[in-house]
Image 1 (tube, protein in one colour):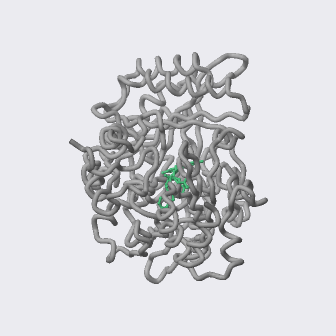
Image 2 (cartoon, rainbow, N blue to C red):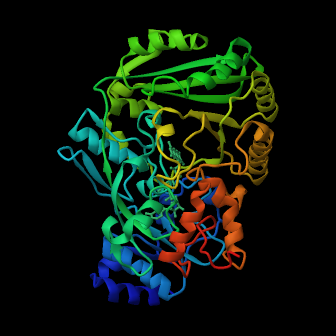
Image 3 (cartoon, rainbow, N blue to C red):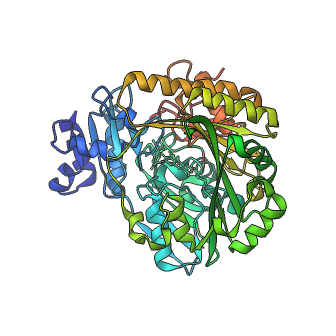
Amino acid sequence: VYNSFLKCFSEKTKSPQSQITDNVFSQSNPSFSSVLRAYIRNARFNTSSTPKPTIIITPRSESHVSAAVTCSKTLNFLLKIRSGGHDYDGLSYISDKPFFILDLSNIRDVSVDIASNSAWISAGATLGEVYYRIWEKSKVHGFPAGVCPTVGVGGHLSGGGYGNMLRKFGLSVDYVEDAKIVDVNGRVLDRKAMGEDLFWAITGGGGGSYGVVLGYKVKLVPVPSIVTVFRVEQYMDSGAVDMVYKWQSVGPKTDRNLFMRMLIQPVTRKKVKTVRASVVALFLGRADTVVALLRKEFPELGLTKENCSEMTWFQSALWWDNRVNATQEDPKVFLDRNLDTASFGKRKSDYVATAIPRKGIESLFKKMIELGKIGLVFNPYGGKMAEVAVNATPFPHRNKLFKIQYSVNWKENSAEIEKGYLNQAKVLYSFMTGFVSKNPRSAYFNYRDVDIGVNDHGVNSYKEGEVYGRKYFGENFDRLVKIKTAVDPGNFFRNEQSIPTLKNAK
Ligand code: FDA
């Protein structure tokens, strides 16, 4: 397979032999393992029994990507596309069928043009690199995207993308002006050439179903020269229940310059099992203003100026990445890709449209103490989010109060321990049924969760795809299926949760 691939790849790219062998890795290549592991971001999929690709291709140009697509198709091999490797269930680099990995980490240019208020950001760039390159050119421009700096542009933007400016600006995909993709025939297409349907699909409908995204042109957003961050914690026996309950009516409705994330975690404090609720916030303005605002709207939080730190927007991104001394940090840390570092983890998601009653919060805390480890993250919506039409992009969850992320991480490499934590996630998800969206119970595509359905791409492909597809995309699923059928009728671009074609739909 390797030799046939090399022959095809060199014929198509006409690249020098050394460039080809340096970027196409068979399992016997001494670098195979380090190339594979570099962007595995969940240690659950980094074990000796995890299925390995037959070949890894690390293209350095558009023509390499194009050749990788046509040659994989000719050899009839499944192609998994990986940018930053942050897929929570590892779908960009594992499969139970024979497969190749197309790893875009070398396609990483970021070019920022302040004069036109825009940037081209390549699929293999990380969000940290995007923020850093913006910071190099301007202290009053930013981009609304995720909090973790090593997340890849390719998966993040093709799946929606949100961060702590979501209430002010909406999602990353609301700022995409153009894109480049390699289609199933190996053609490189920009927005004009691909047409508005395919362009729409790759701004939130999930990469990996329609082609290989090379990059996006995005609009930058204005940020104040000084912003404020704060963190306030309360425990179950000292106000956390009231704080979480009240947060539901403040977080999604307050000034859109304010994003207050709520973290809820079972902990042991003074030898007693309890729950800690922490508000972690970004305010696009000064500390005095946010303290006065929340004294009025959210006295249960007890925010004081001492809790607040003022800094630049870029420093706030460092702070949100758990760098408490953000103002002292070297900005270059955001260029660090931290290769081959991952803990074990599982994520799930839900949406809430009606506030959870106070009694519900109490019972939730008790359940979390009983389970012992799994935590929740509530991300408030409202503001700009509610102003964008549900079909403007494939991301449909615009009119919600907040999103829930179920989150559990661990360090032990043990099947028994993993089973226990995965079970905690399932039990808490089931416990939440009465409090979250229904018909369908919705989920955020970028919080990949194979528990909500997978696809074998056999005769039941459409039916299987509808199960997870409607949870992720609501009614936008139908348009995504039509686009998929038009651009990739043979279903070459597929994974366990890709969009099916209309074949066997009836
Ligand atoms: P990865 O390379 O694993 O790809 C994810 C999916 O997209 C796969 O199906 C893959 O095939 C496909 N894909 C990737 N590149 C493609 C390309 N070029 N063309 C076509 N398809 C492509 N999300 C969020 O919205 N806000 C946040 O703050 C965070 N924070 C966060 C922190 C951490 C630690 C993790 C692990 C994840 C997040 N996420 C997140 C979720 C993140 O947005 C999501 O996992 C993205 O899909 C990751 O993109 P990567 O390119 O890194 O992943």
